[in-house]
Length: 112
Image (tube, rainbow, N blue to C red; front, top):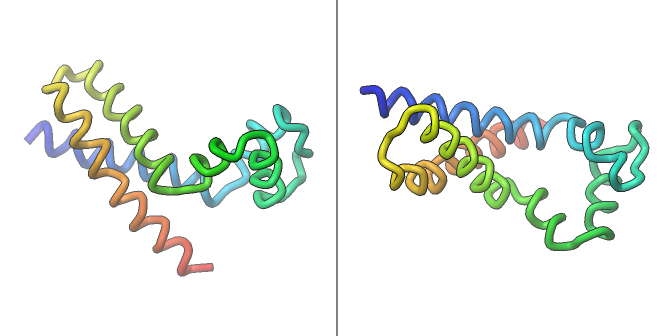
């Protein structure tokens, strides 16, 4: 039962991080200064600046599944360190939580 709770908790954390990343201006406010993007710029302008800086990085941070995997892997790794479950579950969590992230992405995208 503890693993089920950790699974749901991790899925919600990963999904929440990705919803905040994709549907707020947090990336512009936090990382915009590094790329010379003004704080009042749009997300599209930020994405264009990242694409000019590094196209591979732009692809990673604009793809919900790509970034979702790495966010899920990071969250699963932290949960592993705190709770000491089987390390193989990190990969299982990192590969399955992006499905929740993708579902949230489609839910919020269809609301626009």
